[in-house]
Length: 114
Length: 117
Image 1: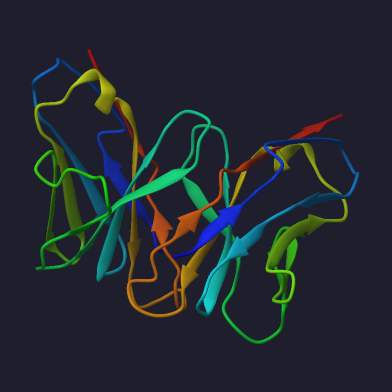
Image 2: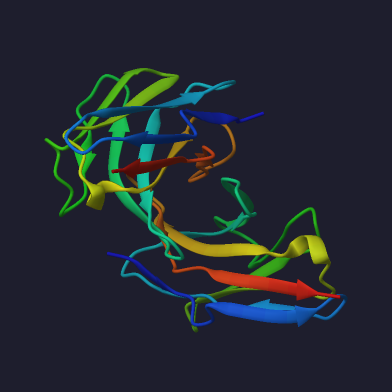
């Protein structure tokens, strides 16, 4: 079975500051890794994912995450955040075979203030 | 592309009644659909996985007789909460996975908020 740990329940930052949202996972098998974002009163949207290949993956809105197998981490970073990035961010893991069921972390609320 | 809808977006019902929630993939065929439950300020918990035409696979601790799942077509899955009670009040979210989007990608619906009085 897999599990995901997001240690920070809330991360307050000022606009244009860099941010890192931490995610660690555990699994005995090969996994896929995901970051989903949930804006207020909306459903989850896929932000980025790691399946294989390059360990650094990027999203279209400036976020990036790096898969570190030795540290079992998949931290999410952005060099300069905007007010509009305020949302709940969920890290998730799935096996790379079978149903590929997602196991989610508890989420990190990113609060960007002016 | 890859849009998933849910209906209704919110529902209030009396204790003891049954409620049906629909999940539709609007522009792709969903070979697998998932149902999640999200409590306030908590993460999503997978309830069950369903493949079109097959019985759903429920996660441990989820009552299959209480949460009936039907995946009758490649674009529609329904979750029926039978004899609902106040403790069933929650945010129910479905997701769908097809053949596009790459391995592992699930597309999520906007969720249905159920309040049982």
